[in-house]
Amino acid sequence: MRSINLTSQTNTQFFHIPNIYDYFELMKPRVMSLVIFTTISGMYLAPSKIHPVLSFFSILAIALGAGSAGAINQWIDKDIDKLMERTRKRPIPSGRVDPAEALTFSLVVSLISIIILGLSSNWFAASLLFFTIFFYSVIYSIILKRRTSQNIVIGGAAGALPPVIGWVAMTGNITYFPIILFMLIFLWTPPHFWALALVKSEDYKKAGIPMMPNVVGQSSTKNQILIYSILVLLCSITPFFLGYAGYVYFVSALFMSSIFLIFSFALIILPEKKLEMTLFGYSIFYLFGIFISLMVDKFINGFQL
Image (cartoon, rainbow, N blue to C red; front, side):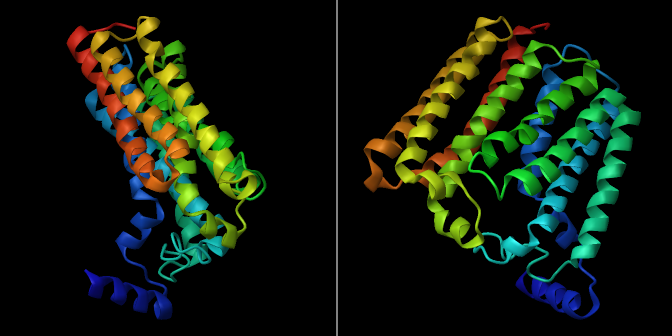
């Protein structure tokens, strides 16, 4: 595998011919996997259904839309990505993909994704996908990221929309439940990314990104992580109290959210334990676990929303 990567880098350097994996990496596949999962969750939890083939193309379209937004983000961040240890090996700063080719690729894929979603489900869902791509690429990447420590807080709205888009793809409308799903991811995003920022603060400082730890300090950031973790817990159990989920979900959500809260509190009272990456890793597991619990609960209880 190492030799393949080296060959790719050599080809790109002289001929600007990146391989398929370079473009795939440009679309942030790890982020795409979470987007695909939450999209499928939103579709499954929706009361209406469309033909399985159309569902497949809807999922594909949303995944491509998320990937195109990630690619545009990497094109915008090409100057700072090469300064950060965490991102300097990405396709553009490493020289494996030409910036102009990356931008063309991302814009074409974004347009294709919107058209596919509009044709396979409905244009309301397609308009939400367009808004998500625009919000992440322009509002977050260009306007917020380099200007405010609230970049992740506000920008998190883009990452919280996939389950809503999945729901709308099935139903053509929005009710309270997909809004709760949106709020759950929206509130989860700050503690998730701030946990990483606590560890990578020097990296962000080098690139001039005003992440929360660099602006208000580690102690204040940990306090805000705790506050958001409390809000996540409260939001996570809301579906049960509003009748959207049963006891299977309630017990699971309360248990997982309590662990999230304990880790967040431990950051403050046990700083010597260096639990930042533990919280970061658990937060990923948590989000998958919450949505799996919702789907299992619906499968068992058959809620009609």
